[in-house]
Image (tube, rainbow, N blue to C red):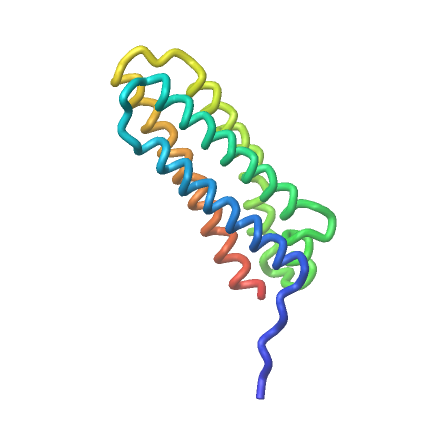
Length: 145
């Protein structure tokens, strides 16, 4: 009889951050896809949820990249995934910058529905990038453990 390996503290911590990031993504998607009565109330909700997403992503980065964190553990325990872990790590500053840029754009001028539509498109692409990053991490964990 084979027993399934027990999750490590690094894996459990990363899983918590993964759930937090998913919840922030769902809340953010709700905000950007909501109809708006006026641009300013829509913008305020989007900015609030975007700031939450930015914080959840920063927590994800801190947890996975810390000494003894998930990327280090995977690289030690399953060396064949080290290069892919490195690629995920390299996405972190790119996504963090895209989040900051999205926030700056949301705080910028929005004079019309066309401006809101353009911002929505940009923010939906940002969400897609984060979703793909999460999926890449899930695939990597599956392969490593």
